[in-house]
Image (cartoon, rainbow, N blue to C red; front, side):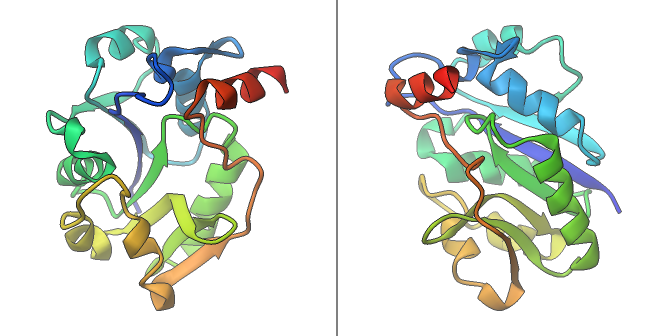
Length: 191
């Protein structure tokens, strides 16, 4: 079974007011930490979808052995990055989609998801937030057609909360913290 990780990093970081993917975190950047955590996982390959500020972000993360996918339609929202990524990764049996701004999600979490998927290969493995299912999530190839139809900035949220018979959720974790605003970033670096 071939599984790829797709890191969505094409956004404009409008709420942050600066390029959040490259903000310093630990010994790297926010995106760098996500890449390190995914590269150390049991996935076969790691891809990063870039769009806004692609050349700056690429320069910041060039030391990592990841593959790049350029989303020219990044201004159409998260869904455009997912569609762009799934088109490139159609030869994989499953794709684990995660966000560039969740550096607290560690390798252990990703490996737990992959392990759960190996036992439930026909199901979407999703992360459970307080009131909804979200990413990181693993999509088996069977769902690629549906992923290619999504639109807007909510990504795969509608799919993750409508196909409940086909979903296995991981329990809520405090690691599922998005870094969207300067306040979020301050919380991240002061903890």
